[in-house]
Length: 248
Image (cartoon, rainbow, N blue to C red; front, side, top):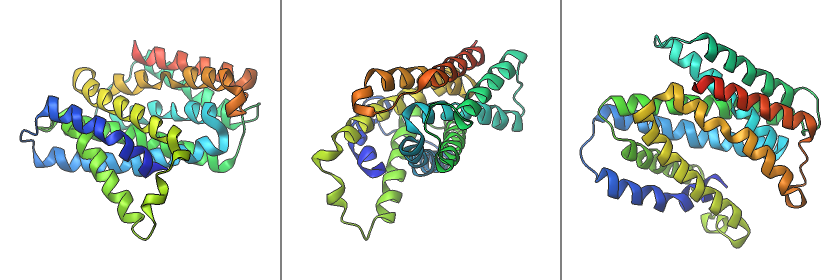
């Protein structure tokens, strides 16, 4: 599933890199950082996210993923970044929302899903942090997106070297392909935003997903068979409020 989503989104990333990066020279340090960011983001983070979605649902997984903001703050503090009281409050609200998902309620709960959600959050936060360092150390955001995708695909194909890869690509995975294309567009936008805004702002802003995912899950209930329930909606609103406080 991970490989199918990455390959389907690769042409988008390559096209943007070809047009806006132009394959000009970048530093070795940034290349290394982008490679590590790709492995952490996709092969660890996104793979874990898929596990979380399968076990606790799309809404629950998206809310758990907002913990990446808290982890991102911790990484930033580790390199001397300051945290305002508003950001601290926002982080607390996000943590409360994640606990609401993990502790009772109408959202499906599974210990594996909770752990997978935590791993996905850490992977996302660390990838953003490394990508930001790559941009600062003589890199390029479009180069970063392409290198991250390429390294992740290469690693995934290595892991699946004894598997019939062609069987992964079938009409049954159409939704996965579409998700891969959309994710690649978001990935490129994120790398560009990191240059303009920095990791401490990009990480919170991209976590508007709890409200979106919870709403879509309910709208398409006939297909998803998920009902976040009142607790799910409350948790999503709390998480989004936390995101807003982190961004201002």
